[in-house]
Length: 124
Image 1 (tube, rainbow, N blue to C red):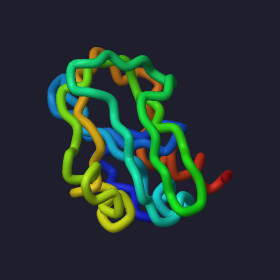
Image 2: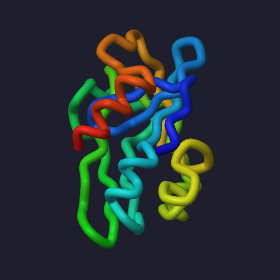
Image 3: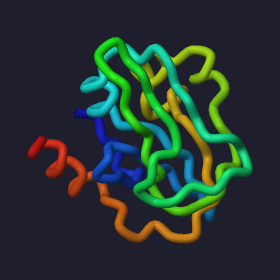
Image 4: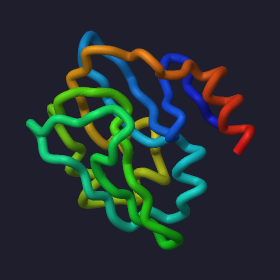
């Protein structure tokens, strides 16, 4: 399982790349493999507020529809229009071109490092 050590993770299988008070957010390779082929992504609008642990979008695959959970409280600064147009980027490059949104965040409390996330993912 590919888990970049410079990222933070959630128990809901999202990753965050923190740069100052801005977090780029996506789903992990583990999540993208579990979903199967992603065919549709619904993301919150830029400017909207999200609440940690609450649904803020949906990811639909050939297997199922899954909620996208906000990894932390924040304001949506940008969404990845490329992934809305080409949802398969979530599968082919989950830690790169398949990012989902950028948030202005106040806190990273409760997020996991790569080792803690790996233990969680191994437990299923």
